[in-house]
Each structure stands twice: as structure tokens, then as C-alpha cells.
Image 1: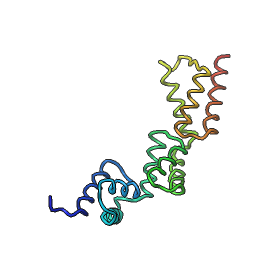
Image 2: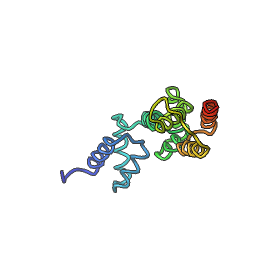
Image 3: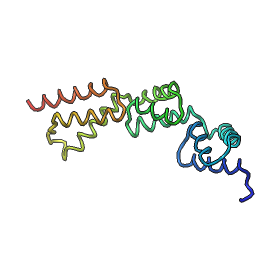
Length: 169
């Protein structure tokens, strides 16, 4: 164990990182450099992981976008920005997102979040929901914080207000 080459140590550490979650190539490079490995060792390790298909930025982008869009219910802007933070270029991030949005559009994600919020406010399906202007402002702010486009937010909120106002009359 103590006689392991830096290359083998870097490889083992990289695999451990990948067991926690997928990583982009730039992320892996940064993590390995942060662990004190020199550039040659990092390059060789990343090349080996890529050849073994353990690292694949296209696959990583799709998986990350899918998780953020379908599980976390994030908006397009936040997903693209998070992929950028992981070293994925904007074009690749948008391509991955476009593929995922065929499964659940951004507007559908907003609707799911609004429905989830409203369900949390009621104890039964028969109970009327009281929504104040403050509630709507908070909802809009929360949706913007999740990276949703303004037009997607306001389409859903406008419909919510119409339903709410029609139910009250």
C-alpha cells in the first residue's frame, strides 16, 4: 500500500469521488489537483477514467440536468448555471437540458411546485385555500430563486389567481 505510485493513489481517490456522485472532467481535475497531485498525474488519471467511460461530460450533463429538473424541480437558468459551475460549457448544458425538458417542461415543473405548495396548505381536498397577495409574492420569489423563467412563473401564477378569484366569487 505504501509503495503505491502517485498515479494509482490518484486513480483510487478519483474512483472514490465517483462513487459518491458523477463528476465532470473539469471537476475531477480540480479535485485531484486540490488533493496535491501534479498535473501529469491528474492528466493521466483523467485520461484513464475517460477511456474506461467513468468520466463522460455529456452523460454527466444529462444526468445532472435530469436530477435537477425532475427531482429537485429547478428552473432552466439554475440548471445551466449549476452545470457551468461544474465546468460544463453553456452549449452542452443547454443541449442536455433541452433533452430533459422533453420529459417535463419548465412550465410543468412550476405547476408541480405550485400544486405541492397548495397541497401543503390544506388538510383535505374539500378545504378552500386562502391565498393572499403576500403568499403570491413569496411564491413568485421562491420560483425565481429556483431559476425559473419569469414568463413560466407568471403564466402559472396568473392561472392560480384566476382560479382563486373565481372560487371566491
